[in-house]
Image (cartoon, rainbow, N blue to C red; front, side, top):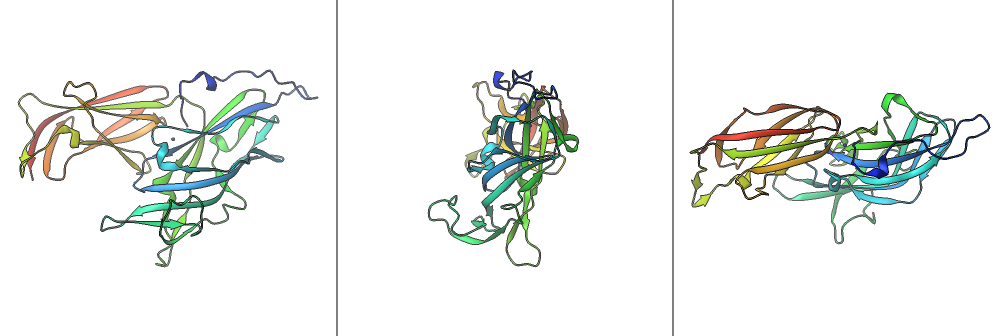
Length: 304
């Protein structure tokens, strides 16, 4: 899941603008667009967005300066794509991103990775990259990919609107049909009116008297555990647990979560079986502007 959220920055306070009204007495408004990404297993997902526009009674270009972004760097953060662009008052039914090029790097069964690109000459490819196959992007460089708007449209009328666009990497790329070995981009991408995002803090500590095993002279530690969060679509993000305060309590923090239902689990070393209280996976509800804490206690751990 990599998400529209609240960044707790004064820049994004909603309020009336001092713009002048038109002949009908309706003032233009401003719009800002943030981009984030929901969890996934792809190693890299790089896109070049050359234009962003709103479509209503006419086409309003919000950005025409190309930007190249690795979507996976947006986990727990956002990128500002449009900063307070002035937009004529009206109702807009479409937000479109013109994506001219892209590549993904995926992990193979043997642990190696392969790169699939829209073009072997794509400037966004890493230096010396070997392209294994084609990444298809049906018409995205022409008409652009359509972003689902909240309620089907967005109304601009004198006030600033902030949209957070959630590009779910795990759901947006897949093998092309027919066993050709190609990949195809079929974006799962949504926009939400600016709402307060949620934060989930996950902690893990051992119960009194519980110790982690030593396996082949290796002492297993809680630092080898990860918190794993999945959204309703099945996208999964893992964060390493760390003892940030030096008190023996290991912690992972998922930030900028879109309000909704999640499933929380822990992933431990492959060499052990372990049990926690509460039992896993755990259903989590993240509300707008809330911070949720889930505390796990390790009650047993043994070699497999």
